[in-house]
Image (cartoon, rainbow, N blue to C red; front, side, top):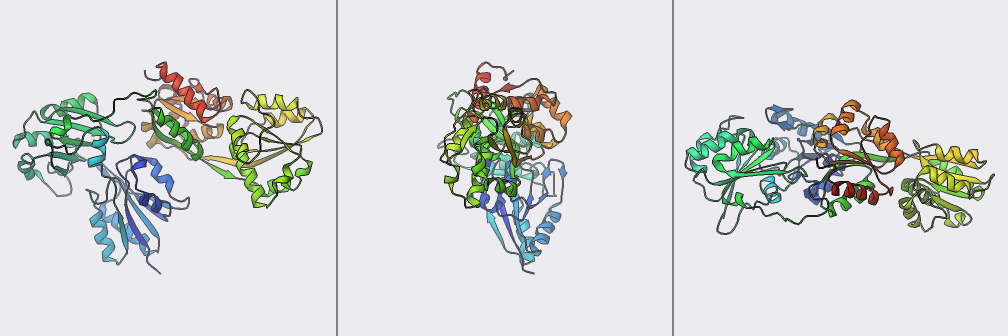
Length: 508
């Protein structure tokens, strides 16, 4: 059997936007993903659906796999002929033990490629406004592992090095050392570092909940205790730690942390709008659109001459309908006699992108308002085609049928939401807002650990719903505190958050 290949990819410091283009390209082609404890779940969404995912993360005091076991996993899958991506936080060669893995691969004749990553030693500090070098203040920097800097871990004690570290000029950066902070400070001062030296700790660097505490070296442990900072964190010692080179310009949503659930389309639209207003955003729940019943839709397309109206209740319905027409090599002139109705402006825009303008759109973007408007426009006996979501509301179909209208109700897609596990709840608890774009997304979010998530939304982030139907789905899980967008679009969600944040409701 042909040997596969292993790619050691640096994921960067945490912000998914700081993954390299080469790293993203490789993740999208992975057959096997062997990954560490990562700061963002979004990296895992880049791999193909059939990719084998193997977690080998290491946390302070707890390793899921030994390094030797990790080496064995890489060798095993590569010898099976697989394309293996070894994803590491930061850079594979900055305390990432990438060299050990390469030695193991080389011993078995397995080809490999190393893809550098942005190291947190620079990026996390930069995000906090601390330059690792500055002319006349810090003309060099030194990166030291905080795990072994006080003699703990892997038999690689560097305790004796503090007499050298304390005399080094420039900036000292300790990675993975927050749990050893007191010992690190004690040893630096013991061997001659001025207790008044500026110092800082940065946690969750480059992420929305990044925090930075600055103090004189001797006071740093107490300042960190008072602030309640938790690992992972970076310790920086040197004059540059006194700098705070972050832009002070306030935007309307500066300081707001927003979690976005839903499809890639909603994430792309809403995250851009929120960031432009100063918010920090995280992907809090992922939904995928799964096309259904193409054969059934194709059968209805063959009878379009019998259809008077086509009614779209979502942008996904528009997209899938016209994709089916193209796949069936159907001429758009077959729609010349058809009138179109849409539930709202977002769906109307999607229809316009296909070259058609809606003949009817209700002033209130709800299924109920759409049904009322159509009943006054469609004559009994006429036929209406509704390409919709499998779990969509039955209100429209039932209202039209009661009005004597023939309804061709065709589920053309389903919304599958990935479960949000317990490990993500602590991250979500720090958010100010959590957005939902559909009832299906709500039900998917509560698919696991429903009681814990109900408690989270009662006291944590404020849910923001795209419309009444989504709000009703949330209410079914016992949630009463929520905001509902007046306009059922990404802009509507943005407006609801802006209004609430301006009033200070979710800052308490």
